[in-house]
Length: 485
Image 1 (cartoon, rainbow, N blue to C red):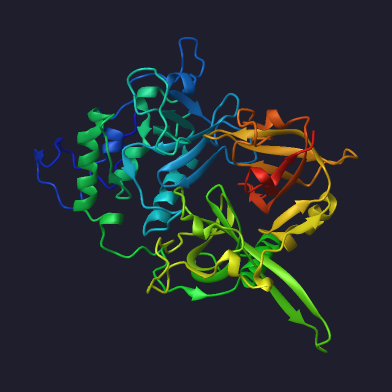
Image 2 (cartoon, rainbow, N blue to C red; image 1 turned 180 degrees about the horizontal axis):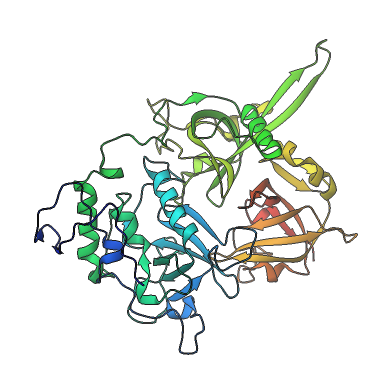
């Protein structure tokens, strides 16, 4: 049975809704809301996600498929990752392939690379709807015929529609469109709908209703989940101590959702992540000796490249950003105030180069840890977000790929004595073993299997949805991987 729920209530009268006018057989109050998501006959899926034999269709071939939900998988980890209000990574029912969907026709406030008011609320709304769904179907922008999907401007995500139901095996024409639901709740503006013109009238009517009733984005009220405060200077050691404490003891990170200003030396830049490192020297009580401790941080800079002057290793920076304990990626800084092109700036929150790489004092230079595989596996937090070099050769035994362009390969390694390492190697770029032969490339983990390498990179961790911590080395460039055989 098709849903007939409403956001508030619908009086027992018939409404004919257009883009700008509403004609009714009885008067309607300002607070009365129409539930376009569950009552509109115009916004319905027109093709089945099953073939004639009842098998799930192939998204990459047909542009439609059912994906994993909490109701149809026994995985201990979430079968999907909600990135923000309009981007979710799904797993296929067969093959467990990763499909990154950028919701078509909407544009929610950001909650990752840039944090904006109502971004977190939009993400929470999408997450709640996905979590309660027992049938999740993704389609391309075409909802009338079977054809391959198209990617967005990043080349790594597919533009698509997300259809959901709280019923298992819901008939395709009874599914509800989450894209529209987000607009209806006032958590997104309507964006380009040229590829789905049949939805245009309903989408704009839902946005107009949200605006008229001052829902969320249109409320003119501050977002209680957004930090409007000033940036506070702190140091990377204090942040490191909070990260370790929260991971080891399960406590809440006190820096979460705080606006912070930090200083550090660029240790690397890879996969839209900037890494800073700094050192702290502590004298003994008698003043005869000192201990040095390094602390680092990972900073998500968004999907667009930043000026290269901020990414050169050994450049000493000061930047202002939002600290977020992200459930998908662990702790990181994000929403950097700015990376201005011009060198001079009067805005204290702009990112500033305090020392260029060629001028940096010796004590501020990046320190690369050199360790055996076993030593590195024991160090973990001591070298977190710092560059490391494994001093022994590693043989690649397996791994997996994440979809995208280029493919991101995770490699499983073992040492010469056959010992499996406590970390993996995550390669976010196409690897060229011989710079003089650019045609020979490794574009997935299978190309690495059986080979032996030496590796340098940033030592980081991945936090799964179930809270498990796995460690990985992230090479920063082709030069960080040396093919031995």
